[in-house]
Length: 164
Image (cartoon, rainbow, N blue to C red; front, top):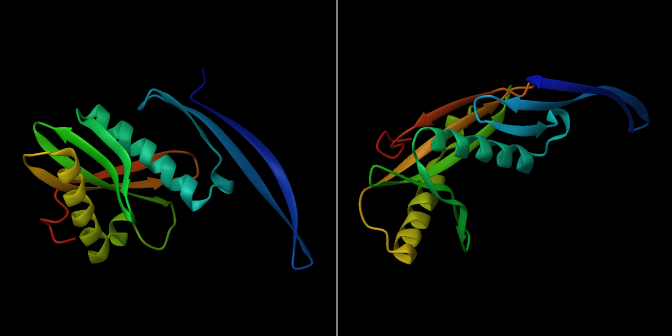
């Protein structure tokens, strides 16, 4: 099976009375890194789809590094935790930030104090509901997605400790 297959199509749209033509590439990639087949249509991805794709990449990244995934997209009211994982007796609350290449801000730059406060609140609710005891960490997993369907993944442990 080839590593990637490309499908090229030309799409024309009328916008404000002007005809606009652009080329759309659809990539089907067999990823050796994750051992999974991903379909990725870069030119037509919404922000939510980009985020979901980034969370898939992040989950596979953590599994390959020995983390046991406990929950994905856990929600309670308005609070959410992207990934809850455990490794070596430590519970990790992982915030996944995904950006398309060329974005104004890097994924790391988008993590702010209000998000960290919401993560703390969500983690507290999670720990009480699940009766989890032991050490905890708040981590960041930054994913940059490039047009050729490759990803740059960076894991930042203890983001709260570093004052992000």
